[in-house]
Amino acid sequence: MIIASYLIAGIFAGLTAGLFGVGGGLIVVPILILVFQWQNFPAETLTHMAVATSLATIIFTSASSIWSHQQKNAVLWPVFKPISVGIVLGAILGVFTVIQMEGELLKKLFGLFAILVALKMMVKIKLEARKPLPANPVLFFAGIVIAWVSSIFGIGGGTLSVPFLSRYRIKMTQVVGTSAACGLPIALFATMSNILAGLNQTGLPSWSAGYVYLPALAGIVVTSMFSAKLGAHLAHYLPGHILTRLFALFLILVGINFLI
Image 1 (cartoon, rainbow, N blue to C red):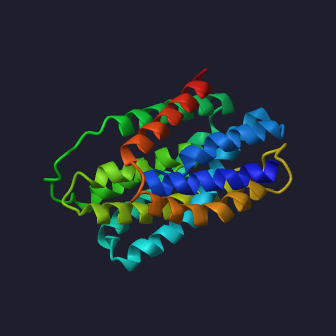
Image 2 (cartoon, helix red, strand yellow):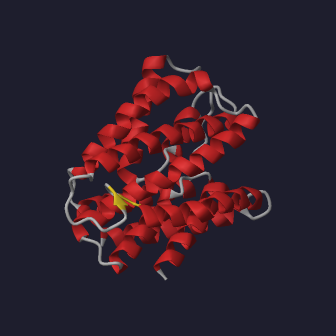
């Protein structure tokens, strides 16, 4: 039953990433929190483990996504480079921030974040991309902020990087491709930081690498790699506005549950 829940989490994570272009972490983190509660993991660390494990899964899904986007020349590497330097710093700072929080506070913050993302999905604000690309220091600072927030909530960064890059004179395909590329260093450096930060943490379950729970990581990766491709395919055939509202409603319910 536990292993099946990890596989199901991977399926939904991949589908949502493919259908809506938002990080699977918005699905993975709530499911892992629920499953870890079923497994009676320590309450003070289970939310941290859910976030850390979610970030670890993004290493694999983002690597696959980068390959697909690169095949279509959709990754702007000159934009990615200064952002990625900031991402390294932001990812480490994000993990440092998380481990200072109590598990219950982190859960409530995730609930609030999920509601804000849902509202953003339901209320589309169209901004005209009139601005030229900013200087590298601005991209560097943006990378810090994007990675810091993403590391706290266990997401790949697309929720923040897509709106940021959309403000500038970049094709939407390149916005998505470059955002996907940003997800890899966020996940990689945040995961390494979570492993190191949890090495001396007592009470973690067996098969943990720091705060990353390896059985959950394996189960989610196995199914999400395939379901992400299915989600991207279905996005061209299913009524997007209805699916988006249903997913936003799901996030609101998750958020309210965590806040209460």
